[in-house]
Image (tube, rainbow, N blue to C red; front, side):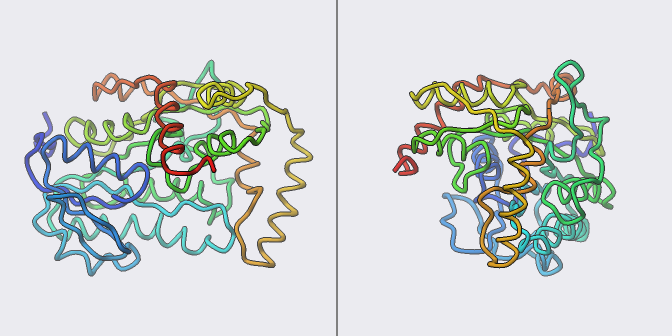
Length: 331
């Protein structure tokens, strides 16, 4: 066993992104496991009992060294998720420079082991017959400041940092607590509101968000330094995903196949509108480009080395539907 691996429940953990979708579930898993948590927050946030709230910003990581000192481990789950052109500079500052900076702060503070949340965005398109593995890396074709490119660059920065680091690559998480929501969560919200989804024919790997959180703790406690681990679930075409969500929502299980040429034209027009008005995209250009790709992945390495096991995606979708209904998203 690597001497730097975490002992369950022993030592303080510095956690970024605790108020986010994945980060909030990582926080719950850490507390359940018995860890003491110091959570980095930017705005108002009601910390759970026993959690130390640390005010700070990833864009000023040097100021965080005193707050990190005394923490044995770090889980860096914070990221800026946006498809808006106006956020591209901030995306690079937070997801790339912020990752490098917080890991350097961890080194200066004496942290022994870091787990960094990457993304399946750092993986290339892959077919269901040959899903992507940890040896595969996405190309640099998304644009230097896009969200997907930032996650790729952020993971490379994490694995080249001067502190022992491991990366976890969630695929598309689904479950309760998806406030924003993510693209998968938006499908659920749209169906709850009676909108008919359209598909571009692609596919992706869907994973319960609770399993993603569990993968972070497994990586902390069992992972090998310098390795990356995919935390995934089941590979589905977008049409299959739509039907699963529609069944959980209780609506008609129909989808519309949208021609890519029509979708990309509409996205380019919307992108021009956003650049002029500064608003948020309704038809994200980056999302449309990804929507026709097969983004299938395998979690075999995480299963073999960490003991990772994904649970039911159907149940996770049903939990997400209940959460959205309980929190007023269906209105």
